[in-house]
Length: 321
Ligand code: ADP
Image (cartoon, rainbow, N blue to C red; front, side):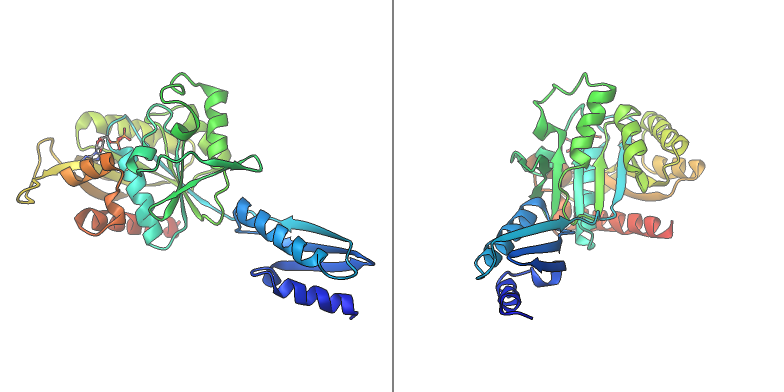
């Protein structure tokens, strides 16, 4: 080893995180070439690492040029689609809280709000930042221990309503191909029903499974059945059915009553041969929390426990496949 090589070694030790990532290094005269493994690093961290390494090495005597190649191993991600037969059944509320519960269970989670008809994740998550672009890739925003992107952050409210086919698919592509860093699980809050976004998601991003949210009422369940049929036809495994707004919990005494009935979704799940993931009651806490941008799954209390149980069941179902 020459003095220059020793100096290069010494220079690299000054850059935190550099040593373990050097896949190859060579020197030809005064030109140093490096291959850096940048897997799992988000774009800003990758750029910063490259800058620091370059600065450290060009400062070494005898070095005129530094060539750096960053490799990127694409992480394997589990995509979970959250659908519903119709709007207003709490699909977005369940998606957000489930995503947070999955993160608390140890997953690295990204949440994609692909509901072009009513993107509500910025409100539910209380996150109104605009995502930044770095190297032509959107940077998801961070909130409550997960990363999130919503179609509502990219376009004005209402302007996505008339999107069909290619427009919808391209918007979904921007969200799915964003810089999710080391996220291992992407939860996708789909529009209600069965449309272009569902088709593109299934064709291009192959979800590991779908969760269907329904209220206990018969009409909502008939719609949910249609959504289930669609995923079945496209060979997407059904992780399970969640019954939301199942019974009303009195904010004063905690007693559960059943103004719309409950248990309908569990019975329907059985008939359709779909796992039943759990039941979330209609509570004032959940409604207020969603409006206030403070998802209860991130805190302590009954709702947090319900979503933790839902997340555990979901992980069980995925592991069993
Ligand atoms: P969707 O995504 O199916 O259209 P949302 O998640 O936006 O439905 O929920 C519709 C409304 O119902 C929101 O105001 C939300 O806060 C409320 N909501 C959803 N689930 C519950 C629940 N379990 N208890 C109380 N309110 C709920």
